[in-house]
Length: 136
Image (cartoon, rainbow, N blue to C red; front, side):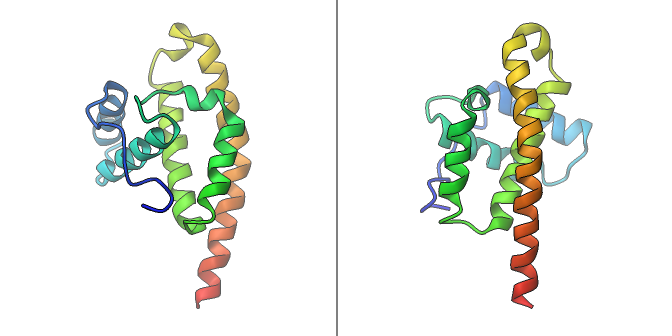
């Protein structure tokens, strides 16, 4: 994690992360929600160390470069976990906030991000499964 640059994170007190934590804990009743919020905070820090925001969905090509760089330092299972958490964070922004009204352009970028990362996640999950089978 440290080699990959995912050791530092945005503050968990950032409003969007606090709201996401509340959503995970109270709405979805996820017991280990703190780990998921920390993963999202690490990823958001990696994309923008100054503050947590959704602007990474506008820079999709940079997102793919980051994923490719992480493949050199992390196992596919770890990358898959990060992607699932990031996707749930973006899905939360799409469905549980008024993003479509506040920022329609960002809403469209988030929708595009979800559509494109769906195939990417399937591929990484498949590679992670192969890694696990290879260990047996």
